[in-house]
Amino acid sequence: MPDKKVRVIAPIPTLPKLYIYVVIYVRVSTPTEEQLRSASNQVSYFVQMISNNYHYHLIDVYLDFKSGANKEQRSEYQRMLNDAENNKFDLVFTKSISRFGRNVEEILRATRLLKEHKIGIVFDEEHINTSTMDSELLLSFLSAYAENENKNRS
Image (tube, rainbow, N blue to C red; front, side, top):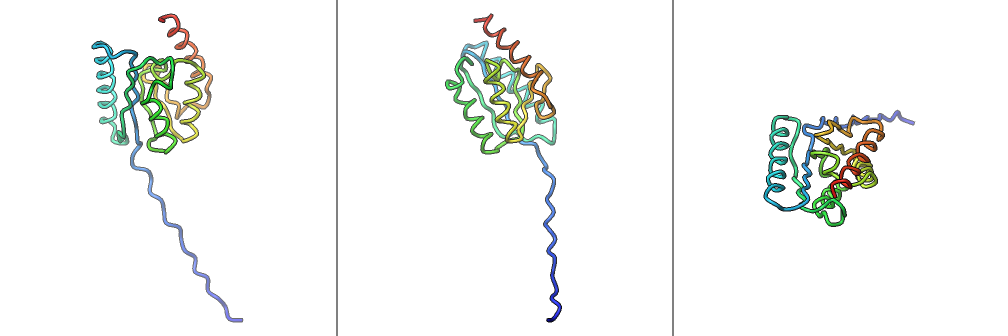
């Protein structure tokens, strides 16, 4: 039997990812002038921060002008989670835990869903980036605190 030559085809090298695709999530409770100014300030702040980091590429901004009591009322929140399931971005910037969700269960459920898709959340006020967190303990504690603060305000 003649010797057969086997030609090994080398795999095509993959290039490193050039950008981290980011989104901004902003929620204010009511569409009053003060709340609209707050939303505008938050978006401006994050856009400026993102534009100062050449690794970031802004994909979308999700704005909800609803109470956080019922996530079904927050259409942009739902759209963000749907986009996450379709892997449209890598990182979410939001002002605080209390602006992201109203109770521990909701926040942890969303955080876990995003983490399943390798998506992190940056909670700016708390200086938390879930991409770099190994434990949910701190997030659970701060979520419970935010939930309690929201109840006391209502």
